[in-house]
Image (tube, rainbow, N blue to C red; front, side, top):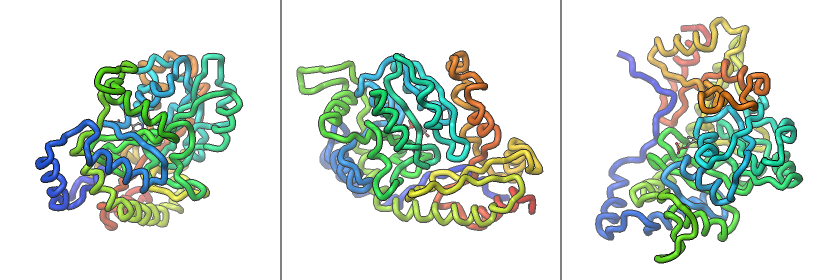
Length: 369
Ligand SMILES: *Cc1c(COP(=O)(O)O)cnc(C)c1O
């Protein structure tokens, strides 16, 4: 019987290397609340990522919700419909109205040329996504934000470790939010972080993730419990030792797929982004009208062969029940996003996938199997 292949499989370090971390936790009985591993992991991540400050969270979604609170965003926020639902959900949790803007079909990122037209007197921020880990148009988005006095919060859930023009992509915008969910390039089972430019905003974020406590008797805001535990933080420290190998292997896989699939009629690969040191978070292909099957036909054919790709991102956020009544969610406003959502298929991409499985997938896609 053939083994089932999923779109991703989490990377786990050798178990015996994790045991000493657990022994230390059992010994010092610090389980959470900014414990020693939490502090060490924050500083190790800043070093690794090349950023000044960050604040760890229990998940990327709670971090997104808290990031919006930290900057006191209300009113409307411009965002992309082509993302995981948590991007827009974080706005609804803050009673903010998402305003969807179409994507650039080449990068699958928010089309910066269309942002200005969506700005109203209620607009307070832009929340772009670095989709698939490929940089959003940070220069143009930064310029628009400066001109109109808007904040920029990047949903950087896909962008762990990505460098743009030689420095961390996470240094752009007012805040960037990472996810360390099991399915991401770097995982702590569940987890996330807000990357912040200065110590002052980090302080406010640290209060917010701890119920709003500034000290034993002072509560400065209706905060939440978003604190990462020592179990996750210590695990993250161990994962960091492997992340360079993980990303290197992902790069190899990306290269193999590209070689095998570049000439398949009707299959389009996303061009590698410019000036970018990538993390190869996903391997999306676009199934065009001149391919022998529909996208869903290819999806089914792969499933029939025990290969489970995913249609990231389909359906669009803007077509989900809580969003589809909004004026900006209309299909005519989001032509490219709707087209791409109908064509995209993310092929299995994770460090432990074997080369013969990649070849088998490529054979199925190219019609050779
Ligand atoms: C995974 C993901 C999130 C949510 O992160 P969690 O850690 O799972 O809460 C948010 N946005 C995007 C684009 C994601 O892919």
